[in-house]
Length: 320
Image (cartoon, rainbow, N blue to C red; front, top):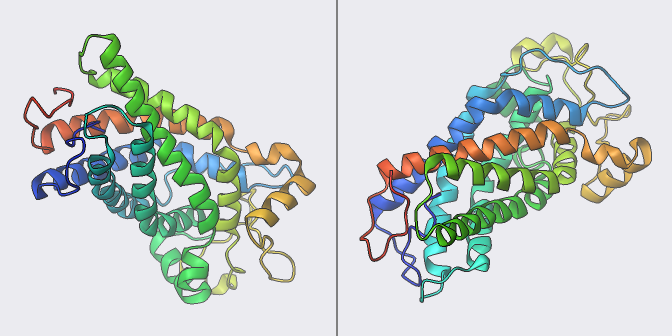
């Protein structure tokens, strides 16, 4: 992002045009990452759900992208609606750097955006794994059959345990690397490709560390409820999973396989070994590393156009 774009120690208040610029830039950057790297995310998700050495389904890797963008864009906008004002409020009044301020601001933004991101993630993973043929069908089925909270917010605990630290570490590390570069280079602002490099490094680091919780999150979100009879599949938008190499977490009795984060971890380690917690590590690190570069490249570019420039005395923003 345009780091330190807010006045250190100032009010959390922000001009509507400036705030709208940050929100629009976040939405654009989020959409750019999803559109470019969605196939890798689909492969990662299918790898994490597959059990017992089942073959991986390589078809329809863009399945569910349109519906996912409808959730990702407002979620990213909401993230920056909280992150930028919070950063402005938390940074020290003397203009010095504060890792804690960036960590807290990013975690706050992540918590707010999770209200949209969690249902979006549930629907995305269920479509990617072949349980539903459309995002709309998944939304209506999950809400009606499984409940808004139990269905659309399934795996919320594991999601927050994964994403809040991820958001905090990624944004704080990116901002600190950017400041260190500015100090080393005599105050020269990062160019867009340099920002992309730092964003990619931050993404690889945080992506690798949070992979085990990402696997648990995927298992909890995809177990859902027992699928309806195939005869009603066309009406509900539910697709069968036969031939996909994927298994849901539904047991033979029709009950949920995992009862929560701890139970999921214990069962996975017992039944599949410790390595199961690192399933999809390669695609995840690749996806998030490249995604971090794309995200911050797009974000910097969008903000240079959409966010009003700050006065020189207050601005440490990179020039377009």
